[in-house]
Length: 279
Ligand code: ZN
Image (cartoon, rainbow, N blue to C red; front, side):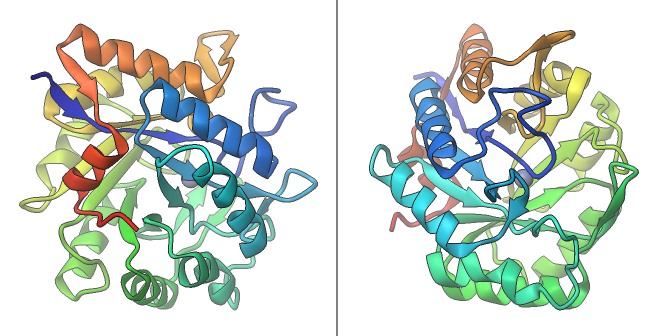
């Protein structure tokens, strides 16, 4: 039987817009359509950000709820919500807002970003220790599988600290996002370094932003990891060519897997691999 690997589709993110790529899904309906297309192409997980009516990032619970209902009416893909905040970047004092979708909607997965960073040379992606402790407690209480997002090497130490003191529940799952301006560069050496620091028994996945996408994808498969693809990380399919859809990026990852004798995991197989109990 071919080896199974999980494909996570990161559909929208907080940064791109329809001006950058008209295929970027921004309404709840478009995001649900993109999730279903990603599922049909082989994704087992969708990582979901929400946008408001002006395409700006929002943590609005009702918008998340409506989108989740649309996705759920069509497929059983694992839904992984972002915790990264809204467009105001006023994250201090807005901890409740960032935790609310997890407390109220209890998604199967959610991103947990292990530290703050200068983001895209533009702003600060702030994840104060007080916020992370609160988010960790909310996620564990709600039964949300924490996806530990790692943008830089120091975040690994923070993740190990939180695993040790129970803010992150084991078995842990890591998502390495390489090549984000302000974070670690997307090189094979850097991915191998992060991989060596994983705790015993952890599962992991990786994505490279921009031109590094395919080298990081291939290295991840070689090192035994799972894949993340999607328009959040790559608006382009290749140099100078916009991606047509999230499904197109998932389909390419699936075909690369098949070339090396692997198959994409189904949502239920991914639940088993990640230790998620189906709700
Ligand atoms: Zn995201």
